[in-house]
Amino acid sequence: MAATPIPLEAKGIKKRFGDHEVLKGISLQAQKGDVITLIGASGSGKSTFLRCMNLLEQPDEGELIVHNETIGFRATKHGREPADWKQVERIRAKLSMVFQNFNLWSHMTLLENVIEAPVHVLKKTRKQAIDEARALLDRVGLLDRADYFPTQMSGGQQQRGAIARALAMDPEVMLFDEPTSALDPELVGDVLKVMRDLADEGRTMILVTHEIAFARDVSSQVIYLHQGVVEEVGEPADVLDNPRSERLRQFLAPKH
Amino acid sequence: MIDLQGYGPRLLEGALVTVELAVLSLILAVILGLLTASAKLSRNRLVHGIGTLYTTLVRGVPDLVLMMLLFYGGQIGINMLTDQLYYAFDIDIFINVDAFVAGVITIGLIFGAYMGETFRGAFQSVEEGQMEAARAYGMSPLLAFRRVRFPLMMRHALPGIGNNWMVLLKTTALVSIIGLTDMVRVAAEATKATHEPFLFMIPVALIYLLIATLSEWGFAKLTKRYNTGFGESSEWNN
Image (cartoon, rainbow over all chains, first blue to last red; front, side, top):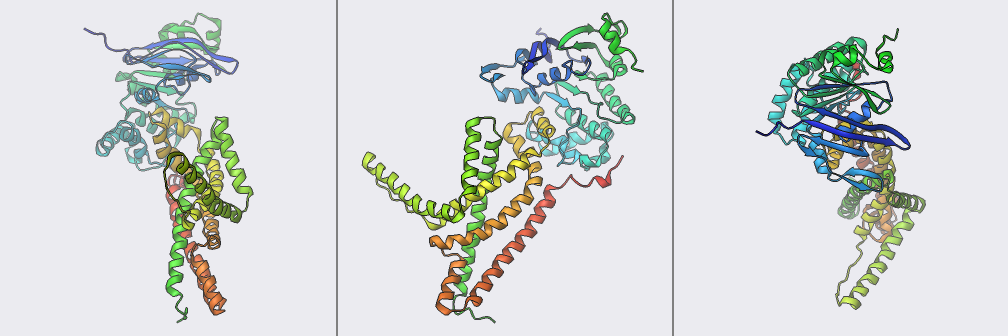
């Protein structure tokens, strides 16, 4: 029997901006149902690493394999670029991203946001996409906001809407880029609750966050990045409760 | 009833020419404007250079001079080209530069440069996160442009487009000089024949005004459409 394909694998990812090497060879393997949390101080490269996975940033070196499909690169005079952008588009559609600033399309209602990519990228019928979208909006508690525009919703609602948009792609892996960092503290809980549900139902998730308590609860693996290198990696109980390095201990220590 | 001394039907025909000329020029100008804006925002230095050269040239030379250059110079250029074809390949064709086509091309070229500046500013005002989300969800560059960048950009571009359109509409009057029978030319001929300038020029002015008023109404509709999702934050809800 063939092994089930690994949803996402990154090997030796390196990225530099000008003279500054942001990622110095980072690897990660997300098995089905894994929740992998990337933590680290700002500037540690965790968001850049996440953005390399759906090629919003082009890794200078390293390999990306999504569901058994290796992404091809070619060298150009501006550096390495994907060899086939159609392949990148296909792979991006399998890796839904949830952004720090939500990035819901502001000229569309919430419902239109959720059906946009299923209709235009996945080529689903409008009818089917709407039915699915309504079910997802119900799930994140926003069915009554379906016809609202993003500017008419609170940050927490926008982020839950953005999660519904991500789910509508039925993604192989969900990428969360500091999903609660732009929210008022009292709105964080609702978003984390939705994310916990997703983790519980076995969604494969890769998450950049500062919510250490949440990471401890839901993660199958925690990766601590420092200056573009993996400093510690393991189960949350090991990494978060028994940090080996002094740096991670300090990072985890209460700030006040 | 005003007696237009038999010039009424010709004046109406002329008005139709004016409208056709203006609308076709606008379409060309919008296409050129989008291309120019993309060129000027391109990282490719050659493409960027071409965009800059185009806007600098067009905006620095009077409309009338450009029009004459294109109409007379264009005919000579095409003749030279067809002559070459004849001598070299024995292909015998004759292309006549039509005043209408020359008018559309010239006005389209001129206003393409102004539209380019309008669109460039509008493109830049689209928040990068909006396009990033489009890319992240697997949209091709064309799809992302059509579904996200264009509708968001139009909100910022419409006031400028409206402005350019009004100026473009009035610029069409210049084509009477290269022999196109728009309503200004009809009115000028009628005035010469009858020595009654007010009888013909005032209706012409009123027709321009009518077109302008209708356009304002149309642009108000468009502005409302492209503003959906913005400015309603007063209904902010939790």
